Length: 537
Image (cartoon, rainbow, N blue to C red; front, top):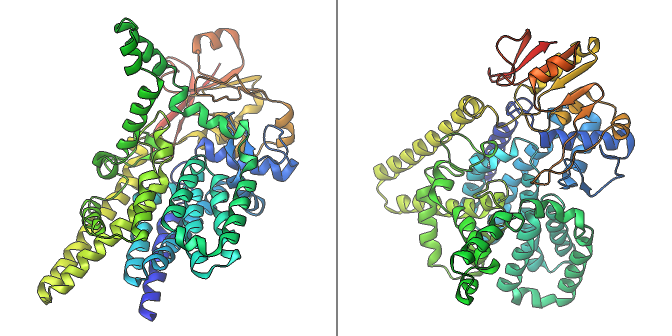
């Protein structure tokens, strides 16, 4: 037991190092993180968010109404560490490390196998999927932590039949739903699975179960309002008007006959799109080769899982098929429902929205690796046992080293627009030089630059609440702020600005600023990429 505890401590230390190394500087802070931080800062200073809403559960942000729990988790860090990258990212990184420990406890609770639990915690500690979203202020990482913790307390509850365990299980599941939208679909389905597989255990104390269900229902009432559902509506497949146009076109091609209407309608077409989106999350390309299609959510030439997990997952599934117990039934059920929320949106596969997949996949992969190690041990041929373990160690080490190399060396260079590189440097320059200009124009190419300006300059929230306007929502439902005092954020029409705004400062992308312009400063990001050119008009 002493040896096992030492191994667990070393795994947790490894998880900590991988998540906290260069946490404040890599990757660059993105607009969503800045919005979370500035909302927390605004609450501290005024008791209202950046748009003047008093202590909200849903934060208006860019009119996408984000679930607000992570803002409140970040708030004390902003209070004591000030408004910076550390204060936004420490909670996510810390709870990412905590999840590595929680999955150890969960596997041990489910299968009573110390070796299996240690392998599970190790694989999650090094998981590219889990690492990527632990190293920035991603709300989904917190939601996955709460879901995993909720499951752990559920299994403690059915063993001990104590109200406190049932209560904490419900509480953590609800907290996940207050943290990220996809949890609002995954958690109810997961609850159905728990009732199906553990009905006999739950029948032992129907009073406690009934009270827990009532508490769950009462706690989720505040997140069933219109604002809470607005973001889901903006990115769902049901908001895509092109699907309706496609149905009408198909019906027109069939002369709007009865048969055509039966074959081409909302139920059929939306179901086909959902099935296509859903299946993409299980494709080998997504899992093992290239990962998410969105650059912010991916690492070059890397899948959501390591290449060695092709083997460990296959072996794990092979041995699980032979099992008939409810524990494995639940893990497989969790894996099946985990991408459901992501499949309902028009971007698939989506590593962010399907993030909770990483837990059941890691458990299955860990089981497969344990089986491989046990098979080598059972051969009772020392040389084969040592060689097999050595080769496994080398393969895993190579996969991890390659991932870290791609992450730290290549990601910011191959995906220079995946985060807001260069914006911090631009704001620093602007803060030192904006006083002598009547008007300043800054390109908005880099995703909501106004919020990063507010974040890095620590603009007085009480002033901003009274002196800003959100634009009308775009086709995806997002809004932005064009003006902060004398600074205007929009795409640069250089010739127009040159003629109409003398004594102004123009900061544009390299494609927006002509070569013959009076460029007085070139601003590079931490990745060495040229992002802005500054022109004195």
